[in-house]
Length: 437
Image 1 (tube, helix red, strand yellow):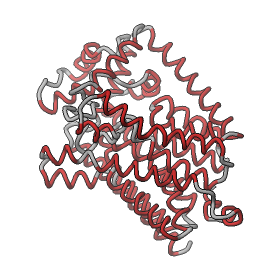
Image 2 (cartoon, one colour; image 1 turned 90 degrees about the vertical axis):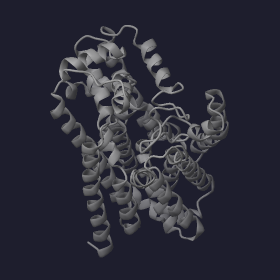
Image 3 (spheres, rainbow, N blue to C red; image 1 turned 90 degrees about the horizontal axis):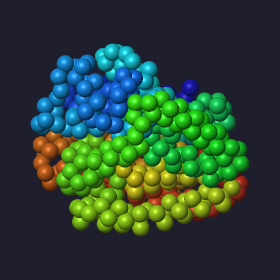
Image 4 (cartoon, helix red, strand yellow; image 1 turned 120 degrees about the horizontal axis):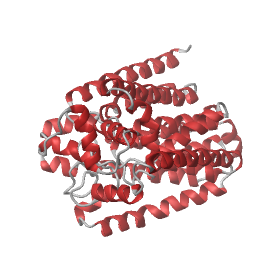
């Protein structure tokens, strides 16, 4: 093992250690720690007890039966009530979490955190192993920084921790052409749990054509199977679940709701803030018609261009990683996402390494944008800032601005590189990107 590779491995191991340590510390000290998992846990238990998980009163009854009392309706407890009792997870997610929901809470929460930690670290090692020989320090440094900035994945217990990990593992399986069935199952589970996170990854393979399209269609079949089983499992307890699910989403996204991107949001700001472009535009005019339409007028053409390019370009490892880097950033901007969803930027590391190894201004720009995106969508920068400012109104409101802008900038940059032809055919076939698969 070369010294550079050993240094890179050391950074990765240290990053993994601090990821777990910081995540556990955040969960133990945050009064809202694991509330996202509580929503899943009690929603799934509600179905198991033949009640409706999309009726807050039914979920509250199951919660009270286990905990002995309900959180009060003030302060942090009020936010907890909004998260835990108003279920906005798909039936497929509730079904997949059902085995854990059958266990006592203390056992389930440890297993869930362990599952997220193991899956995310494994995904990071998979990406690292693809290109460590070509850019060891860049891979080790960026992935370690991403790990250290991802403690919220463990603290909140949101499904994003598992979905992002499974999506990245699937990409590595497909592009390496190894353990393809595992990749299909991983991406199907991710797509069934959080389609707005795993969907862009699935869309790339669908549009890439050839064997990749066949794999995307296999993923879709397994996702549909999971959806059919989940709906059948749920329909006895909640025959009107589509309308109730839509009502819960509407309540969460409406003015003052927990997921609303506007200034009146009850949960969209702070460390786990909303990072979609609507959060910035709502500061200009807090009107969903305005900020949703404007966001799509800005981002829709970019995503359309990406789709057309993916349909037309010949597959190569270099182009695959550039495509995934572009969409992993762009897809965060027009849809509802929070900072923990942006861990999908792990897919931008190989593209950054490719550009860095090709040298020049593009390489420096790729490193600068990717590094900044990891920092501004991570945890540590915002933890420090909000501790210094004591969560003052100005810092919390205007803290929403940098993350969407850097994601948009990184997405546009990688899209621009994706649209450019490779330097030359010989260089592209012998470039460092070839060793990434």
